[in-house]
Every structure is written in C-alpha cells, then in structure tokens.
Length: 49
Image (cartoon, rainbow, N blue to C red; front, side, top):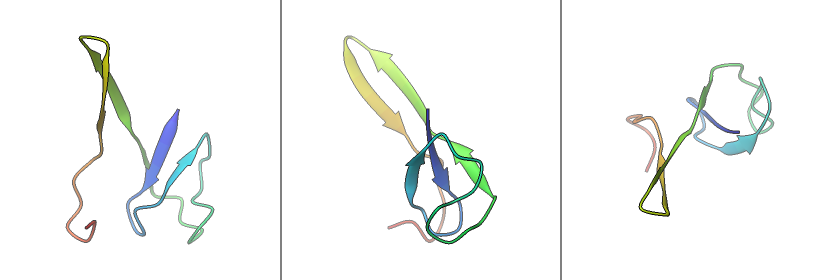
C-alpha cells in the first residue's frame, strides 16, 4: 500500500511516519482499478502542486 504525507506530499510505502519530514500525518493512497487501468487518487491538499 502507498501512503502520502499531508505535510510535504511525499509518497512512500507501508509506513506510519513520513520518511522525508518525519510527520505521522499520513493518508493512504486509494488505487482504483477500472477497465484494467490503474487510476491513482491522491487526497487533495492545497500545497500539493
């Protein structure tokens, strides 16, 4: 499972704490499979560009 940090927006695997900024505020990234195509849905955050 992939996670994203809601502070620095890094993406990492299977961790409860962000390896980049050390924050424990992480959200799982939901991967939806539709018509054999992977669509990655990342939770919206204002400072993610």
